[in-house]
Image 1 (cartoon, rainbow, N blue to C red):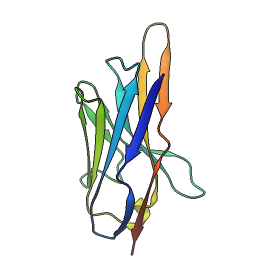
Image 2 (image 1 turned 180 degrees about the vertical axis):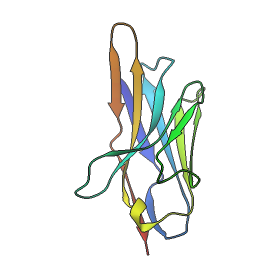
Image 3 (image 1 turned 90 degrees about the horizontal axis):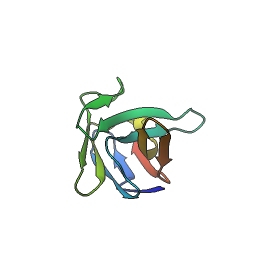
Length: 119
């Protein structure tokens, strides 16, 4: 089992910045992929950014150049620095842990943190 706890969400004006943090604990193995997904009201959950334990990153087109994902492997933490926020970024942001091995795949989600961007 892996537990993920997000923090750092809140209300910000358009053009502002926020940093989300996610602390992972439990049975964490590498290699793995951690990252952020978001879900706006009445929309499907979508990928925002992911980072492997080898520090390779992947971004949604809509956030590339504005958001930066990073991680601290020693502390089992992943971060999302969000700049130039837009009202369209308003959503619940979820931390994700994903690992696939020969015999099994593991995936866990955090409880989510609300990000609201006002125009």
